[in-house]
Image 1 (cartoon, rainbow, N blue to C red):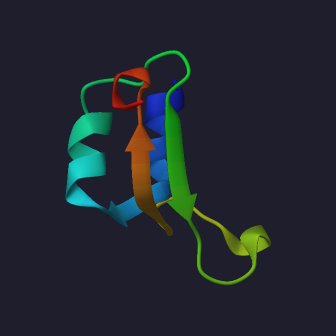
Image 2 (spheres, helix red, strand yellow; image 1 turned 135 degrees about the horizontal axis):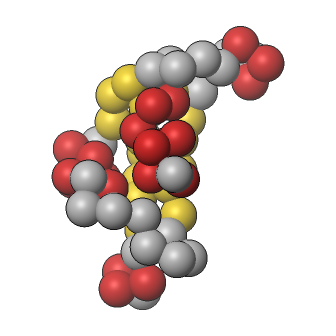
Length: 58
């Protein structure tokens, strides 16, 4: 469910991060999504996936 949310709000993003996220969202995973402008105007597909980290990355 968290994976679906991260993908839904990220219309675009870092290709490596998007590829890793497509393999699932593990416990303690972290998706960094950037929105331009005011966060109250955030919408589906409006974000940019800056990074996706998993415990294996640490």
